[in-house]
Image (cartoon, rainbow, N blue to C red; front, side):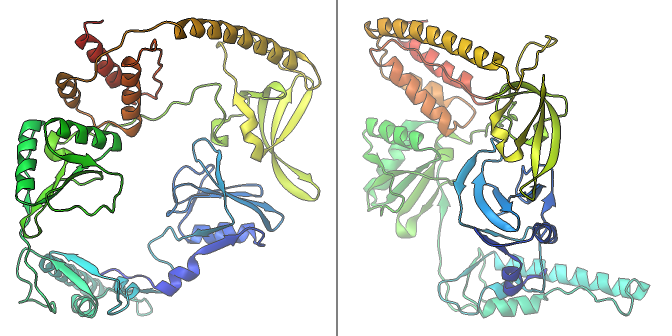
Length: 494
């Protein structure tokens, strides 16, 4: 019932920026603020923008990555998408379109004005239209009663405009003039909706199997015998492939396909990658959909803990730097960060990072933040800054390279010896292994499943196994290790 921006107002409000165009940075900042974007020190979320000298970072609500727009004077010199966490560029772009980040801009009107009357190819779906009508009626009555009471109290002055909403009769009439599909458990013909055709559908939920593959196999074979098209959905491609293999092992003719447009034939059982909260059976068209939730029960979603940035990593944003921090320039060595200063070069003001060295200062363009790392070392240790023109940093790097080469030689010799020997070959997964893995409460991520598959492949090969699993806190490394440990125990190993 609330009014939204008209199609014309919304289109006019969008900001289009092309490589090589001339634009005014102050105007851009003002427009982004008017469009509902929040100005911050660094862009971390959609709906934010940040300005540093001639660089504008903005994260449009519709995009996976934020944009970095760099100006040379008033000309757009480069446009690229970048990763908000690592600050690394993702791709160069010739053009960007920034959409509003607020509820409405400019002139407003009913939302349904966005959908032309009787437009072919566009259909509106109404879930329980009877309830929608009642909810609209209650909302309209409450709004008009509120306006009436405020007018009687004198809350509105004569020159003030009373807020507008679209009334329930207006909305109903607008919907009746458009192509709409009503999904209702009750007959809608005796209502305010203009119903032209009625189709009945009897859909029922599928059974829950609580991890019993025997019961699942029985039902799948029954569906097949009755000529049903059966789709089994898995939220992971790896799990989907494994599910198809497990069903085939129970003499159920199921197969996995990557083709999302595959047309399932009568009597076929197809395992697909996809998501659905629950399965269903549609007897009228002989279709059954079964999900992992139906098979194993609802698994918990793992809550990922916030990633901790380790010292010594590349600096992702200026928000991580504080005046007085020790930093390492990859070519100049250890220095102290002294802040951001604007410097005029060739009649253009640009932001520079000021670094203090033993014998002077170094200015680094703000866009070259990736050449710096936070210093990582023992706390409380006395630190000695490098000289800008000295050779001590070059000698340090040469010494480290020499140590790395020595370690590399030792590793090459060690792995050459290991390569010549055969390791223990573990047996393929057993039924007990599968049942054990299904007991884990959390739903595995794609990365976890890949690590599990790689670990098992190593264990089942003749090559001596040497695999390191790395991941953030909350990644699920323990679950991977437990699966490998269970597999080892099944073959009598510790």
